[in-house]
Length: 146
Image (cartoon, rainbow, N blue to C red):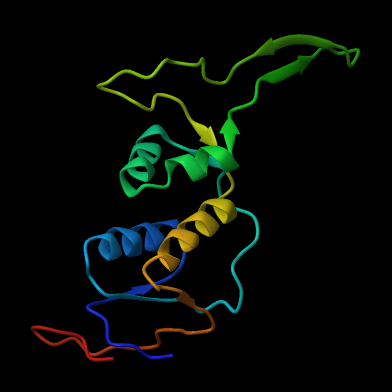
């Protein structure tokens, strides 16, 4: 599927999808290609930092992210006999403030975050083109022809 777009995004990870959604919400036509034949399962990281949560809020998907994920679980430390000894938090909970609405790290797998982003992109009739690889391009002063 080849379409005329102002922007070609190569790669359908979180960065490419956030870029595509930001552009789409601002009326910029985008095309996303991914060389893989299917979306990756799992993640490179499951912790979403507070600033990323603020960006998700700005993009209108924070509710979906929070519904799918959760706060960082507490850690249970065991003694040498294998008995639970101590419970502690990796990050103590901080209340939101107007200046910093998101203080806390949130847990959500990268595959789930990408699925949410792709769902929001569908509202703009944008879908990732799987099994489509950029192998070369020709740079001009004012454009890159596809």
